[in-house]
Length: 268
Image (cartoon, rainbow, N blue to C red):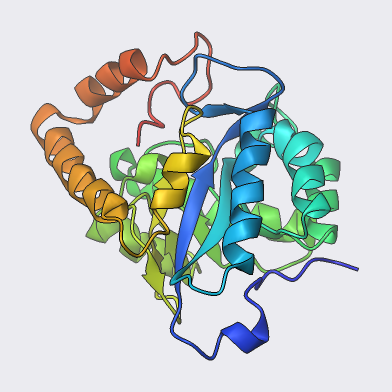
């Protein structure tokens, strides 16, 4: 039986709840120096934490998982671990990489992910930063990716996650015109139900210990609000430095590997 996309038990939706969407990228069987790859054992510890949080009776925030890009590790590593714990996730796919890039899912794998009950969204066609796109490029990144995913999977794809988290009013207007009803960002904040048109997420680097992640859900902790403040400072730095210089600095700090597909543009 397919997993339910909406994973909050019905009896618990009657009380006020917030969701914290957690953003993962690639999962690897061993440790990596690349910040956006998480070792599978560490990922399992994260999942066990989320199971405990969902079983607790005194929580205010509900953890939800999302994945960007469409790495093959999503279906080979993440899905079995999620299913063994009764968890689900949303997967945002860079459509133009599907079946063409080494290390990324093919269409058969993506269809199996969809048929298993997981939610599929778009993540652009080529992962180009949308704020850098011309009108024609926006059409490709937004409309072509959605229509291709819908054709290949036979299901509506109304959700989009922003490559690199970059957006402005023009990009959001283009997302709406392309048929997306919900846009997932990189703003680290908890979201009230019902979800709005823009949904924040917290990017999870590979070295983020589960003990620290647990603090984000502690009503007595200010860890999440501190992350929101840091994010605003980082956005100010992006505006000051410009995307290209910021991306080069990000690649050094996050130990981007040679030949990685984002070309530094995935910098959150």
